[in-house]
Length: 116
Image 1: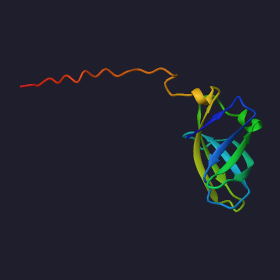
Image 2: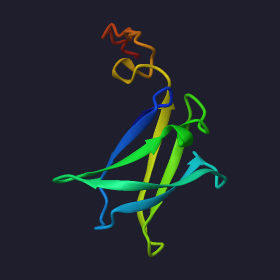
Image 3: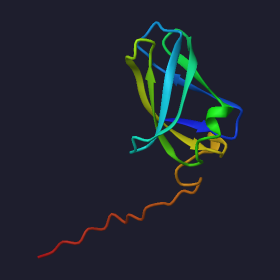
Image 4: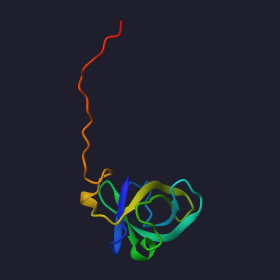
């Protein structure tokens, strides 16, 4: 899953697209919903084995913090070329973790009780 820092001016998604197109129309939906949150066009930058898609600050301002979204990319012939998910966060992505950087050790004594 991709993480997007909504406090930044722009973000880049690294994706694998099966297309030779140079641009994509993206639609963003809240996870589990069919309601369109934001739709925009983005340029595709090709690299050796992946592509990048830029998301600008105007699109980021419409997203809520700590929320998962579905994203769908459509090419010029209305063919779906990308489906994916991302999570927004305003935290430092390098330090981002599910459990807020706290580790809770599970207690396991390896003691077995034999019932007769």
